[in-house]
Image 1: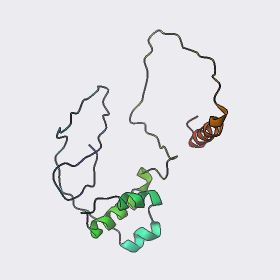
Image 2: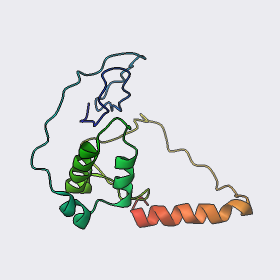
Image 3: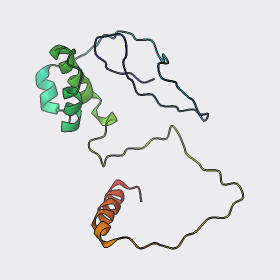
Image 4: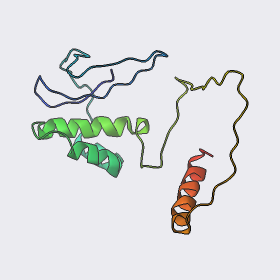
Length: 142
């Protein structure tokens, strides 16, 4: 479970989890996945530092979407934390990032590669296809 900033209540809190093991894990609805602990923030930057460095607009959107019960002081501290660790977050939808923590492989055994002929695409979709290909080229995916 990753560290998560949540509102000040202690039940029915949705959190995101990731399985980094090689085995599938089934988590049923209502399963308790972690204890909830309070955290102390140290070394908080003052507001002028945060705005001068400024987390990107996407990171500020994260602060804006925090539950209403979170105080303005905690929101400011969150913005400071996001600014400090801004390199850990995507800047936009095309900033995919990468990791070397996990690798992915598909075991095909002794099977031969399967090849299919190219298919024609409707001309109405060609612009969108070209845009997706351009985005993937810019991201270094292809």
